[in-house]
Image 1 (spheres, one colour):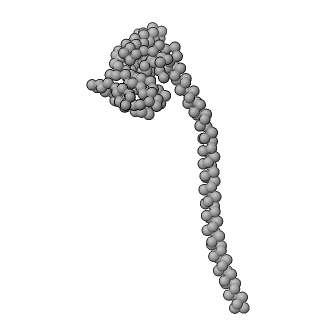
Image 2 (cartoon, one colour):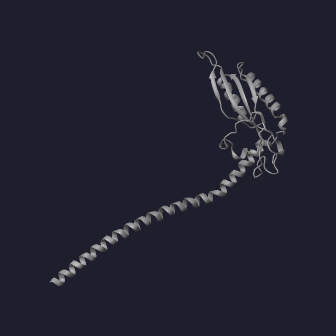
Image 3 (cartoon, helix red, strand yellow):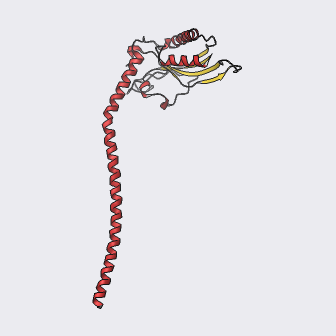
Length: 228
């Protein structure tokens, strides 16, 4: 009986150790199974993303081609020396047309101040200004503060630009029409509005108030078919 009892005790001890070790192994197996499942999900997502790369590259190339056509097709190129004069003439003519067509005598251009220099574009993949083989930009007595790199789409960086500070007056709906026409390239020139500030002029009670409008703009040089 003593031998049998001892054997039972030893068996119970071994069984306890086995159960504890089995539970530990089972927990490890469960953790590894969960990790494997997560890695499989990540791999499936990466496989899906990889399949989309060719599609995204194709779409990106198409957008660049469309942008090039918008910037160049049917538009006569201009030199940097003509930039300011052409732009002032275009903006003045657009304001006069909108004033007449929208019947808003209050819509007038108060001032249009050009930036100091044309920002010369760097061809995609080309050397930076000032580097060997590339002309350095001319120094300016009052250089403009450079725009944040993230604010300019990559596809537009190849086109020369110039900033303008513009002040206007007019009703809100007339301003909306003006911005809409800029967006529809009525000037045959890409223009981006960097900021827009509005404030009412005088008493705003009754009727449609006249607004004081200030907006810094970035205008793009018309490169025509010569831009590569």
